[in-house]
Image (tube, rainbow, N blue to C red):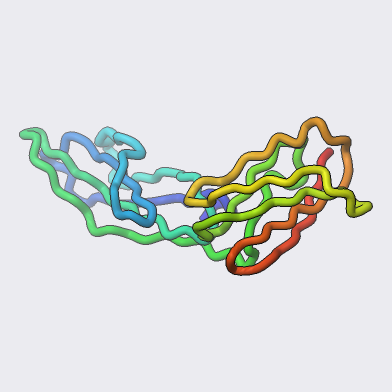
Length: 164
Protein backbone atom coordinates (compact mmCIF):
# COMPACT_ATOMS: atom_id res chain seq x y z
CA UNK A 1 0.00 0.00 0.00
CA UNK A 2 1.26 3.47 -0.87
CA UNK A 3 -1.71 5.54 0.34
CA UNK A 4 -5.31 4.79 1.35
CA UNK A 5 -6.16 5.10 -2.36
CA UNK A 6 -3.24 3.32 -4.04
CA UNK A 7 -1.57 -0.07 -3.94
CA UNK A 8 1.84 -0.97 -5.35
CA UNK A 9 1.90 -4.37 -7.04
CA UNK A 10 5.32 -5.99 -7.40
CA UNK A 11 6.51 -9.18 -9.01
CA UNK A 12 9.88 -10.76 -9.71
CA UNK A 13 10.36 -13.08 -12.68
CA UNK A 14 13.49 -15.18 -12.27
CA UNK A 15 13.48 -16.79 -15.73
CA UNK A 16 12.50 -14.48 -18.62
CA UNK A 17 13.80 -16.44 -21.63
CA UNK A 18 11.27 -16.71 -24.47
CA UNK A 19 8.86 -14.24 -22.79
CA UNK A 20 7.44 -11.59 -25.11
CA UNK A 21 5.41 -9.47 -22.67
CA UNK A 22 3.37 -9.32 -19.48
CA UNK A 23 -0.20 -8.13 -19.14
CA UNK A 24 -1.48 -7.10 -15.72
CA UNK A 25 -5.20 -7.75 -15.22
CA UNK A 26 -7.66 -6.76 -12.48
CA UNK A 27 -11.13 -7.94 -11.43
CA UNK A 28 -13.59 -6.67 -8.83
CA UNK A 29 -16.36 -8.75 -7.33
CA UNK A 30 -17.41 -10.55 -10.50
CA UNK A 31 -14.03 -12.17 -11.33
CA UNK A 32 -14.15 -10.77 -14.88
CA UNK A 33 -10.54 -9.72 -15.49
CA UNK A 34 -9.78 -6.58 -17.49
CA UNK A 35 -6.43 -5.42 -18.80
CA UNK A 36 -4.72 -2.76 -16.69
CA UNK A 37 -1.44 -2.53 -18.54
CA UNK A 38 0.86 -4.27 -20.99
CA UNK A 39 4.40 -4.40 -19.65
CA UNK A 40 7.35 -5.12 -21.94
CA UNK A 41 10.08 -7.48 -20.79
CA UNK A 42 13.03 -5.61 -19.28
CA UNK A 43 16.54 -6.65 -18.35
CA UNK A 44 15.62 -6.22 -14.68
CA UNK A 45 13.49 -9.09 -13.39
CA UNK A 46 11.67 -6.90 -10.82
CA UNK A 47 8.46 -5.21 -11.98
CA UNK A 48 5.93 -2.95 -10.28
CA UNK A 49 2.66 -1.17 -11.02
CA UNK A 50 0.71 1.39 -8.97
CA UNK A 51 -3.07 1.04 -9.09
CA UNK A 52 -5.79 3.31 -7.73
CA UNK A 53 -8.28 1.47 -5.52
CA UNK A 54 -11.05 2.09 -3.00
CA UNK A 55 -11.20 0.79 0.56
CA UNK A 56 -13.58 -2.05 1.35
CA UNK A 57 -13.55 -3.60 -2.11
CA UNK A 58 -11.82 -6.90 -2.89
CA UNK A 59 -9.60 -6.58 -5.95
CA UNK A 60 -8.09 -9.56 -7.76
CA UNK A 61 -4.91 -9.28 -9.80
CA UNK A 62 -3.11 -11.67 -12.13
CA UNK A 63 -0.41 -11.64 -14.80
CA UNK A 64 -0.83 -13.01 -18.29
CA UNK A 65 2.60 -14.05 -19.54
CA UNK A 66 2.91 -14.30 -23.33
CA UNK A 67 5.78 -16.12 -25.01
CA UNK A 68 7.26 -15.34 -28.46
CA UNK A 69 5.10 -18.04 -30.12
CA UNK A 70 1.90 -16.45 -28.75
CA UNK A 71 1.32 -18.98 -25.96
CA UNK A 72 -0.11 -17.66 -22.71
CA UNK A 73 0.36 -18.58 -19.09
CA UNK A 74 -1.56 -17.13 -16.14
CA UNK A 75 -0.11 -16.38 -12.73
CA UNK A 76 -1.85 -17.20 -9.48
CA UNK A 77 -4.54 -14.68 -8.51
CA UNK A 78 -3.62 -12.26 -5.72
CA UNK A 79 -6.31 -10.55 -3.65
CA UNK A 80 -5.97 -7.00 -2.31
CA UNK A 81 -8.45 -5.31 0.02
CA UNK A 82 -7.83 -2.16 2.02
CA UNK A 83 -9.91 -2.03 5.16
CA UNK A 84 -11.40 1.23 6.30
CA UNK A 85 -13.53 1.27 9.43
CA UNK A 86 -15.65 4.11 8.06
CA UNK A 87 -18.96 3.52 6.29
CA UNK A 88 -17.73 5.83 3.53
CA UNK A 89 -14.68 7.93 2.70
CA UNK A 90 -14.62 11.48 1.30
CA UNK A 91 -11.59 12.52 -0.72
CA UNK A 92 -9.79 14.72 -1.26
CA UNK A 93 -10.44 16.28 2.10
CA UNK A 94 -9.92 19.22 2.23
CA UNK A 95 -11.01 19.91 -1.34
CA UNK A 96 -11.72 22.79 -3.68
CA UNK A 97 -15.34 21.63 -3.93
CA UNK A 98 -15.09 18.57 -6.16
CA UNK A 99 -15.23 15.50 -3.94
CA UNK A 100 -15.38 11.77 -4.43
CA UNK A 101 -17.24 9.48 -2.05
CA UNK A 102 -16.23 5.85 -1.74
CA UNK A 103 -18.86 3.66 -0.09
CA UNK A 104 -16.09 1.30 1.09
CA UNK A 105 -17.52 -1.88 -0.37
CA UNK A 106 -21.23 -1.14 0.21
CA UNK A 107 -23.41 -2.11 -2.72
CA UNK A 108 -26.92 -0.68 -2.90
CA UNK A 109 -28.97 2.47 -2.62
CA UNK A 110 -27.66 5.37 -0.55
CA UNK A 111 -29.09 8.79 0.25
CA UNK A 112 -26.63 11.67 0.61
CA UNK A 113 -27.43 14.87 2.49
CA UNK A 114 -24.93 17.74 2.50
CA UNK A 115 -25.38 20.34 5.23
CA UNK A 116 -23.37 23.31 6.45
CA UNK A 117 -22.07 23.93 9.97
CA UNK A 118 -25.42 25.56 10.89
CA UNK A 119 -27.28 22.35 10.01
CA UNK A 120 -28.90 23.80 6.87
CA UNK A 121 -29.45 21.16 4.19
CA UNK A 122 -27.78 22.27 0.95
CA UNK A 123 -28.05 19.16 -1.21
CA UNK A 124 -29.89 15.85 -1.19
CA UNK A 125 -29.04 13.11 -3.65
CA UNK A 126 -29.93 9.43 -4.03
CA UNK A 127 -27.30 7.17 -5.62
CA UNK A 128 -26.79 3.50 -6.29
CA UNK A 129 -23.36 2.39 -5.15
CA UNK A 130 -21.44 -0.36 -6.90
CA UNK A 131 -17.65 -0.29 -7.06
CA UNK A 132 -17.07 3.24 -8.34
CA UNK A 133 -16.63 6.37 -6.26
CA UNK A 134 -19.48 8.88 -6.49
CA UNK A 135 -18.48 12.36 -7.66
CA UNK A 136 -20.08 15.53 -6.30
CA UNK A 137 -19.36 19.02 -7.60
CA UNK A 138 -19.80 21.45 -4.72
CA UNK A 139 -17.71 24.28 -6.19
CA UNK A 140 -20.72 26.62 -5.97
CA UNK A 141 -20.58 26.41 -2.17
CA UNK A 142 -18.47 28.89 -0.21
CA UNK A 143 -15.35 27.83 1.66
CA UNK A 144 -16.13 26.22 4.98
CA UNK A 145 -16.93 23.12 6.98
CA UNK A 146 -19.64 20.78 5.71
CA UNK A 147 -21.17 17.48 6.72
CA UNK A 148 -22.12 14.54 4.53
CA UNK A 149 -24.76 12.20 5.91
CA UNK A 150 -25.08 8.87 4.11
CA UNK A 151 -28.12 6.70 4.83
CA UNK A 152 -27.96 3.09 3.59
CA UNK A 153 -29.63 -0.21 4.44
CA UNK A 154 -26.73 -0.71 6.89
CA UNK A 155 -27.42 2.50 8.81
CA UNK A 156 -26.59 6.19 8.90
CA UNK A 157 -23.12 7.70 9.02
CA UNK A 158 -21.95 11.33 9.06
CA UNK A 159 -18.55 12.74 8.19
CA UNK A 160 -17.11 16.23 8.16
CA UNK A 161 -15.25 17.69 5.18
CA UNK A 162 -13.69 21.02 4.31
CA UNK A 163 -13.96 23.15 1.18
CA UNK A 164 -11.01 25.53 0.83
